[in-house]
Length: 128
Image (cartoon, rainbow, N blue to C red; front, side, top):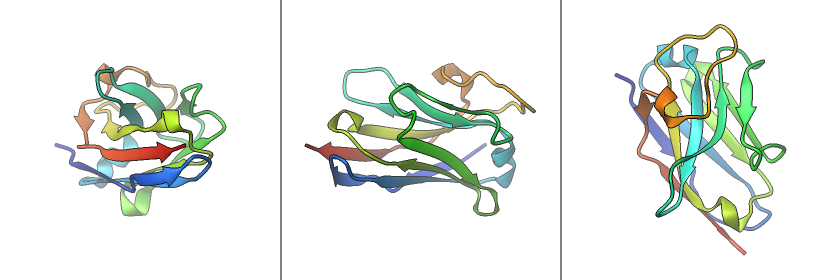
């Protein structure tokens, strides 16, 4: 059972930056695809970014592309989301998620149902 703990959320002005981290309880989960989703009240969870076994398999939502960067620190069993040029519409609760199947290459990344394990989330607020 994976245990995922997010941190790094907070309040930032539009145009600012934040770095979200997700520490996993088991280093083995670094081998599986992992991703970031976000959710605002009354809306479904929305895909933000995902990373596979290699850095050749990284995916972003259209909103995140060019502004956010997903990466892993395997030695620290940590998933990272660097968010730059933040906008008020990025305000949401951000969730880290991990899949339970190993893929050597491409993997299904956008749907919530592809992810077996979830953290509790960290809140990001971007003021205008």
